[in-house]
Image 1 (tube, helix red, strand yellow):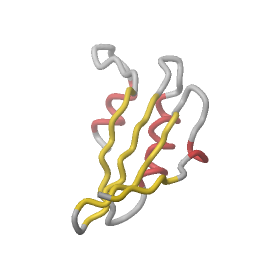
Image 2: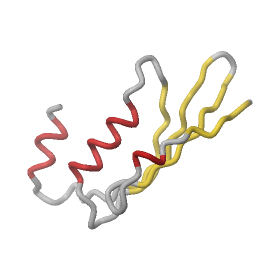
Image 3: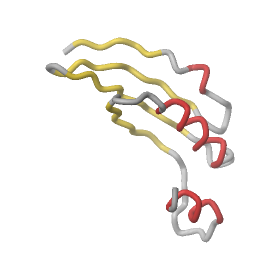
Length: 85
């Protein structure tokens, strides 16, 4: 298995999103493993926008993990936008 660091630092924005990525070659395919963190005081809309920019690579497989600090029990406007997009 081979891996290469992928520079995604230009998508990082304090409190909204911290992100790192590595491209992993597994057999004949390439997977980008992405680790994300969002502060509880961060702007969720900005987080989604920057994550979307990071993930916009057609025909690319991603494995995303991390801590996005979202309380799904709260009644919030972003849920309707997020779940219907």
